[in-house]
Length: 224
Image (cartoon, rainbow, N blue to C red; front, side):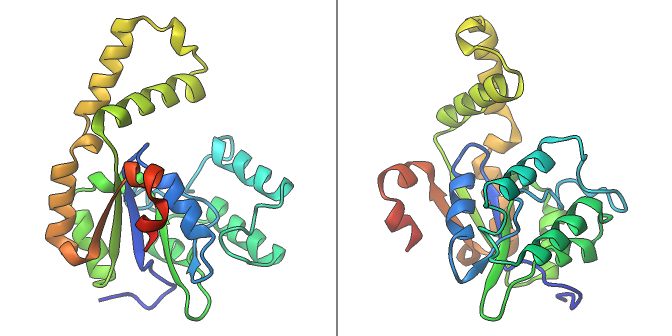
C-alpha cells in the first residue's frame, strides 16, 4: 500500500549515468506541472543508511546549493519562497534518513506531479524495485540510455577531469583503455538486465526509455 505520510514520488529518473539524466532533470525542473527537489540525486534507495544524515557537509552538494542561492537558482525547480527553500535544505542536510524523511522532500502543489532523478537507481536489486512498486503501485520509471562506448568514455573523462583534476592528454593510453573497459563492464552499462528488472516489476507501460542521441537531434520530440 502507498503510505500516507508525506508524498511518495510519482516517477523516478533511473539513469543512465552520463546518459542525459542531467538534461532530464533540468527540463522537468522547469515544467510548471512538475515539482522537482532542488537537489538532483537524492540516492535514497541505493544508499539505505537509515538513521544517518544524508550527505557530508564537507562534500560537493552543499557547495552547489550555496551557489544556487548566490546566483538566484535556488527555486528553479520548486518556485518556493525563500523560507520554504531554507526549510527544505535544513530537512535534507540535517534530517535522518528514513522513509518519512524521504517523502518529506517532495512538496508538490495541487495538480503537480513530483519525482526525482538518481541514475544509480537503474541497477537497483529486484527486491528494492519491488519495495518501490509497493509504496506506489503507479510509479513510473524514466530510463535515458546512451551508446555504451560513448557513455563509458564520457564517464572516464568526467572522472579524470572533474573529480581527479587530471589532464586526459597526459593519461597513458593503456590506463584509459582499462578505465573504459571497467565502466563498460559495470552493472550500470548492463542496460538489458536493468530494463528486465524494472519492466518485470513496474510493467512495460510504466517504463519510459529515451536515448541521449534523441536529446541531441530531436529534443522536442522526446518531450512529447
